[in-house]
Image (cartoon, rainbow, N blue to C red; front, top):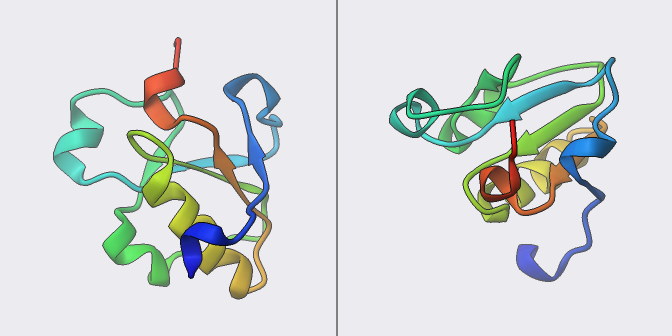
Length: 91
């Protein structure tokens, strides 16, 4: 099951400058507040996302972004979950 699979994770301080932040929350959640430079790709649309860069995935708490990271890894992308999601963001 996906929730038992280990996925690479990082804190906000560990995000590399050349990576991209993908926020998998719904658009209304994203509009309520998000990290600068984050791109909104809701989890329901993640299958359409492609990138050659390292991808840092975020959601509210880390559960949806973990699912997205596992999915993108299976597609061969370098995907990392941001620990604790937006609940740990200190902007």
